[in-house]
Image 1 (spheres, rainbow, N blue to C red):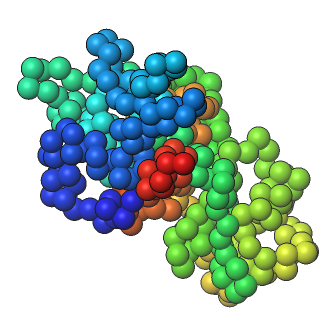
Image 2 (tube, one colour):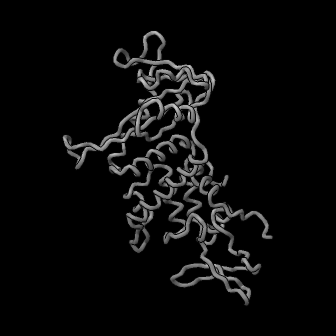
Image 3 (cartoon, rainbow, N blue to C red):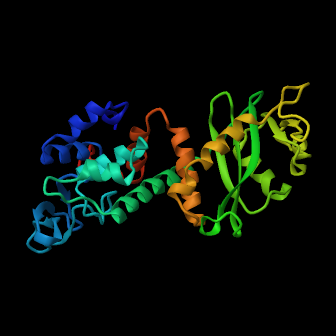
Length: 313
């Protein structure tokens, strides 16, 4: 997977320009596609063969078996009619935040004028977000630590019905925190903003001993009494945006909320599931902003790893 680390555009498109058989060998080496020969459950050897409309399949060479299975079965590519190169390029565009429908169509359009459908592109974007979610499910974000500041806050995202100002709004509340020194952040949808809802989230995502800065929301009043030993500082926004004595403020987390809200109305509509997908993508891009393409495929490989470098038993 190191071959994908810190690729320039030129290096990426050099890989993509390989002949199809060489490109397939390349992604086999990355362990994201099984080798061209496999061992059947019967112990026999399975070779690849073209099966017309069924595409490429493995076929057992044992006369008493002849078992067959799809080339892409159990891989990240399973079920897709896009070729490996198209998926690879789409993932590159998505990871670098260049996957508008217009740009994807331009980049993936074939010489005969054919291009991926909007549904196909949307589906693949969702597959990439699924990888982000799987990663965070296994590796929850924890920020702060002894003596390290974390700012926390809640925000509401609204969408007016039919885009009309006085129609009833759909609302989603989110709670989050940021470590200003590193820029790492967490964010979660919440149904309520009371102590019973927020304190378990704080204890799960903020390390013991952290200095927590918040506004004067009543639910935070006993934050400093938790066994994690948090140091709690507040700023009363009805009086000051920055506390004149302690310098406490929540401007960093408020900046996160502003960036989070910038694009949701244009890309993700009003469905709660789409808002939560965007939240996950937003956090993932912050966490892996230095080399998103490498991290995307590294995480894909963690879920779909064929260990092609191991010898067959």
